[in-house]
Figure 1 (cartoon, rainbow, N blue to C red):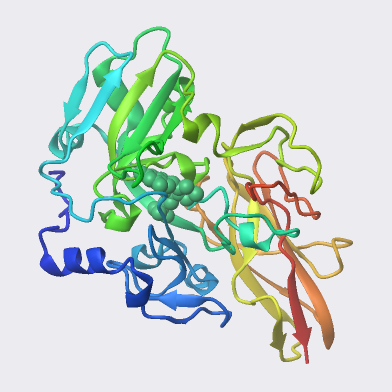
Figure 2: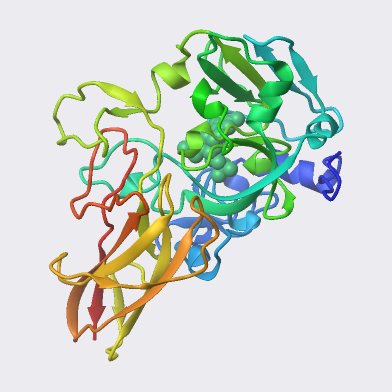
Length: 398
Ligand SMILES: Nc1nc2c(c(=O)[nH]1)N[C@H]1C(S)=C(S)[C@@H](COP(=O)(O)O)O[C@H]1N2
Ligand SMILES: [Mo]
């Protein structure tokens, strides 16, 4: 077992019992989210209050107030998304990571084996490709996330490329396919497996993590191992990772060839109702800024300056700046950025607007270090992926 970490003893009866019991709607305790409209739950193990999207398999969203208070999203408030049922009991001493396929020698690694490789850590945002899907107009099917299907954590583990070097990737390798311990309930449904192009899998960025914010991964966030692909949407961040297969051909599996495809233009943007046209896999994230101290629809007292604060992510480059507008983008006001935790992490921001009494719409816009800025007009696609435009926050100053 890696030194410096204690994995939770998953023989702990309470944990197993609660994990097995929680995902049934009737047993979930319903409160109210920060906007008062969506039910919240504290019934899931290792999680405190989360917005409940679905119980089985769980979809749990982080309230915006959590981002308002932390640079690093606490593990017990970090969002959760599973496609399929997953084991509720894992013995870390018996967990193995198999590396097979187009390699010189197949591997069967314990956590202790992994811990002998050089350790790395990165602060990075894990964001669902469908984050904000529930805010699209016209509406699109799928999990109706607001903007809380994301979180920022310090991930610790080893580089994927160091594991692949142990196996020896053979010439002609094309993709690296990863899958975890979860499995479809029904016969014939395709196992959840995601592939990275081999060139990307061999970069320094991609890692196999066992710790999140200095603690073992919570069960619901992929204990004992998960892939971390900084700058890429979390569909690639495979949880409960137990298999890596090096392919000498493109991955034609369902989760690469059929799911998580978006229109083939940088913003994945098409007119509602227009033909989808050519589609490509969802990959890198775009810059986004989120106001976290004012919920849309809020009524606020008149002040000389109304404080506006939030978090921004740069996508696959750091956050260069965040600006505010209260006049539909005619003028933009720079804000002050908080601590820089690296190019893949959240950057908090704080600014102020002089808002006279009346109704206003506040925009926050992020620009990344590559000069890519959020568009004022919202992009749209039928799967609700890659939401990238500015999110309007309506306020009434009274
Ligand atoms: N094994 C496995 N890994 C997975 C998934 C899954 O269903 N199974 N879902 C992916 C998707 S779509 C998302 S959004 C993230 C969510 O990560 P989190 O639950 O740790 O927040 O996990 C990713 N990794
Ligand atoms: Mo996702």
